Length: 128
Image (cartoon, rainbow, N blue to C red):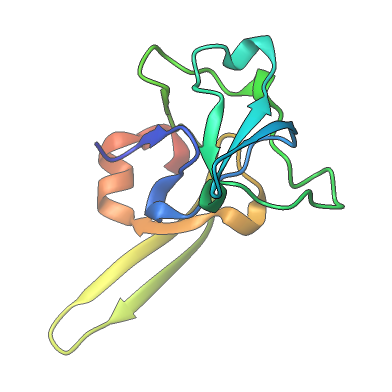
């Protein structure tokens, strides 16, 4: 499952917001029906209020839907773009090397630390 991203989520369970979309109707006390574009026609239109977020003033934070390729399970494979940094953590008896990886469809601020040996096995082209 590592490297597979669910709709609305990214690795490390940090929320990923796609939108903004207009609220069409309030359903009950905690659910809203949204007006979604045709690209998201397979997504259910009704969302719980906890899944929604206020409109952000900065348009660069919003991820365009056209750049994300969903499959029929509403998931997509995340691909690393570049290694930004490297660090070695020293424990009592061993050292752990980590690299900061920038993933496709993410900003530099969202890059995360991964184990260097695992990244070298999966993506050797990043270390050439």
